[in-house]
Image 1 (cartoon, rainbow, N blue to C red):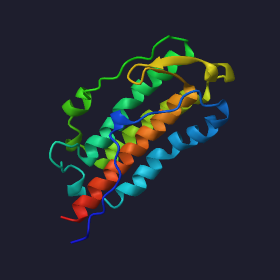
Image 2 (image 1 turned 90 degrees about the horizontal axis):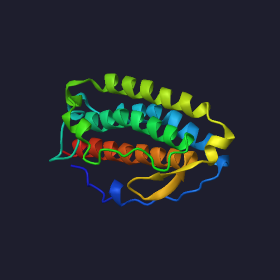
Image 3 (image 1 turned 90 degrees about the vertical axis):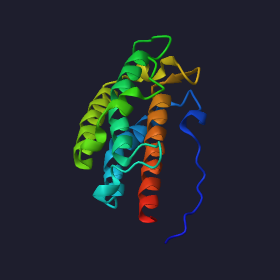
Length: 179
C-alpha cells in the first residue's frame, strides 16, 4: 500500500481572491479556462471506471465533481453578463449545491460528463471572446465574497475553482489507488 502524503487543502469557501485584475491578463485566463477540460481529461485517463462513481463518506465522487463543474458554467455566464451589464451585484449561487446533489451524475459515464462540460465551457469562451475592452473594466459585487470583481477577476475565480476540483479529483483517484 502506498503512503498517502498529506496535502495542504484549503476549503473553497475559505479562499480569498484579489480583485481589480488588469485586462492584460485576459488572454492568460481565457486560455486557462479554454484548456481546462483537456487537462481534466488527461487526469481522468488514470481513473478506473469503478472509481469514478465511488464516494468517500459524504464527499462527491469524481463524476459528481465533473457534473458540478458543468452545472456551474451557466452561473459563470450569468455573472459575466451581470458585470457586462453593470449590475451592482452578481447573481447568487446556491451555496448548498442542491442541483449537484440532486443530479444523477453517478449514473453517467465520465466521457458523457466531459463532453457536456466541454460544450458548456465552449459557450462561456465564446461569450468572453465577444467582450469589449470597456466591458472588462466594469465591476459587480460578488455575493459571497462581498468584494467588487471585474471580468478578469471572475475569470481568475472560475479558473481557481476549476483547479480546486481538479485537485479534489486527483485526490480521489490517488486514494482509490491506495485502497
